[in-house]
Structure formats: structure tokens, C-alpha cells
Amino acid sequence: MLSRTEAIQLFADPDLLGIGMAADTLRRRLHPEGVVTYIIDRNINYTNVCTEYCTFCAFYRPLGHQESYVLPLDTVFEKIQETLDLGGTGVLMQGGLHPDLKIEWYEDLLRAIKRRFPAVWLHCFSSPEILNIAEVGGLSLRDAIARLRDAGLDSIPGGGAEILDDEVRRRISRLKCTSAEWIEVHRVAHSVGLRTTATMMFGCGETIEQRMNHLDAVRRLQQETGGFTAFIPWTFQRENTPLGRSVPQEATAVEYLKTLAISRLYLEDVLNIQSSWVTQGLKTCQLGLRFGANDTGSIMIEENVVSAAGAHHRASEEELRRLIRDAGFIPKQRDTLYRTYFLN
Image (cartoon, rainbow, N blue to C red):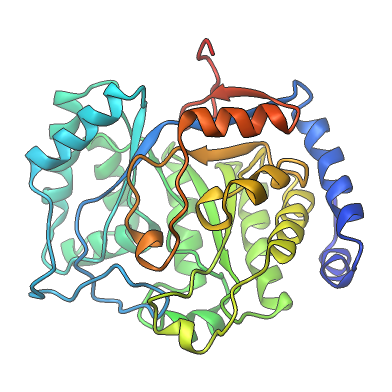
């Protein structure tokens, strides 16, 4: 397994193709069947009210703002029904950190969805949201996660990680949870039987050492619990954000591909690595399939957070299947746990 020192040396290595080939070799060993997956699901942002004021976010609104909202249940049902009509299998539901929504509100939401749509997979609530739910309700983290699980929560997304280095977090999201708190949410989730994903938003002015701190944190927890289904690195989108004024240039495609490949090599225990078309566009996403990635993520029926920050790429199922085939792979639809039992 790649050491931290070796990974740092790779970040400085100009041989992009050589790094990509090494990652592709490992990808072939982990996924010898030659399949690249995608999912049909939807991001439902149930509220944009947030108390954290992260400098990289253009989506949130303060409580009481004229543009703030909490989606009514009927609207959530409509969005889920449309997702299912399009062949979707689940929803990724995330919002801001609302100071007034108690855990009973979230339990009622989950139960209502499961009553109406018993087969839909609920991949919901980032670590900061879950910590906020526990805090508002005066609950332990374990009790909060267990109650959400019992109400219908199926798995937890990796949002809110950004860079798992507290110096970076104090600079870009000083009110948000610490690195250790983010990790603890996932550790506890894994211990009560929930699988989760890990993400990394890079290119926000962090050093390579700080980026490696993030990869180290994910690798250590995966070696401890085995609970991460996938790792999804993506780049900071600077348009429309306060942080964008101090980060004058976004990460290039070369930096993205190198980071993607090193992530594949360093996180050998994480089976799935996703190539991002949402932030990188379809062509770079396709190249990522030869830099260690085995998944292209969702067709993203709806997405509001990253698009608010300036990402405007779109993809249909046909486009994802074509780019997968043209890269030399077999496209297969998957579910949230990366099971590919669909007959296409």
C-alpha cells in the first residue's frame, strides 16, 4: 500500500500519465470485470437555512431571509416520484444546519417517505447536519443516528468533509464541525450498521500536506471499520462564493486527474472511486476512468448546492453510458451500495 511519503512525492511528480497508469492498474485489479457504474438518483435540498456561513458556499440563507425555505412534504413526495419515474432508486437528501428543526421533524420526514415509497433508498444528512440534529435535540451522537436509522435512514453521504484538516476548516468554514467530529459521525454510523461515503473538496488553498491529512483520516477509519462504500474527490467551485475572492484560480484538470489517481492508489481499502462530471465536465470525467475511477456518480436529476457556486455541467443517462462505453468499459446502473443488478 502506498505510504504517505510516496503519495506526497507523486503529487510533485510531473509524470501524470505514469501516475494514471498505476492507478488504472489497481483499478483493474479491484474491478477486473471492466464495468463502470452510475446511479439514477436526485439531490433533494430540503432546506437552505444554515447557521454556519461557510465561505465556499453560495447556497445557504440565514434564518428569516426572504429566500430561505423548508420544503413541504408534498414537494418532497413530488420530487421522489419524478425520480422513480425516471428509473431512479434513491435520493440524496441534504440541507443546511437549521437551528429550529428537531429530530422529531427528521423522523417524521423519513417515516413519511418510507410509508409512501417503501423501496426508495434514503442516503441523507451530512455529518454537520447529524451533529446539528443531535445538538438541537440534546442527544448523544449515537442516539441521534440510531433514531434516524430506525425512522428510515439507509446510509449517510460524505458531505461536509471539505478538507479534513482543522487549519483549513478554520479558514473556510470556521463554524462547522472539526475533522475529528466528522470522522466520529461516520465511525458511529458504521458501528450501528449504516454504510457511508467519503468526499474531499480540494483546490481551496490547502497544501499537499493538508490534502494528505484528509486522505490519511479516511484511510485510517476505513481500515478500522470498513464502512465507506466510496470516495468522491471534487474541486472547489469558486464562482459566487466569498472564498473565491482569495482563491483566484480553480484546480486544473491535470490537478484533478492527479489527485483522483493518487486517491485511488492511497485508498486501496475503499473499493469504489468516483470520477466527477459535475465539477469537471464530461470529458475530464471520462479521462478519470483511466486514472483509477470505476464510477461516474449520478445523472443528477436535481442539484442546487454546487451549481449555486458555479458548476453548470449537465448529464443524461445516455451521455454517461456513451462516455463509459467510449472509454472501453461496460456501463451498468447501480444502487447506492454499488450493487449492479440492473439488466442494462
